[in-house]
Image 1 (tube, helix red, strand yellow):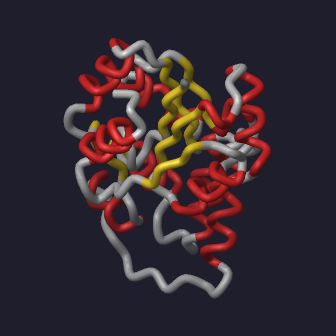
Image 2 (image 1 turned 30 degrees about the vertical axis):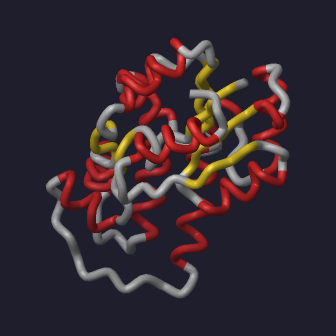
Length: 204
């Protein structure tokens, strides 16, 4: 059995809004009145970035333009680099316990090249046996293809994967792919939630 984790909102706390990111980065907040298509265009840009189709500098520039220049590309970069906050309490110890139980671990995360290096420095993530991410695979959750590619890359079929993610659409897509997917509430401590799910399945 393979125990697979999303990263942000499961093993590490991340900012959940642009305003929170500004505060984390020490960047001034501005009164932004988005255009009607702002969210759609932003999500399309994020997917291109997190699948490696636009580089960091291009992403910062395009996001600055999407905000109408209220934040410079340099300020956008500062917010981006401050987005990862801290590990959830007890995650490293939990991963060690899972390994001691004889279970394999992995991650499957939507992230970017610039976030990948600091994520890999988090003890719980560094300890994972297999690490896959959208920018490495060129695919993005909840696209069904990313779950199939993950199975191919790991050699593990969906019925043997327990997967933890905090976004409902990613959990639904994983379940549709035949994975045993569990939704995590990112606003609460995540280790008790993960532990309860694993104990319920009799694997921990």
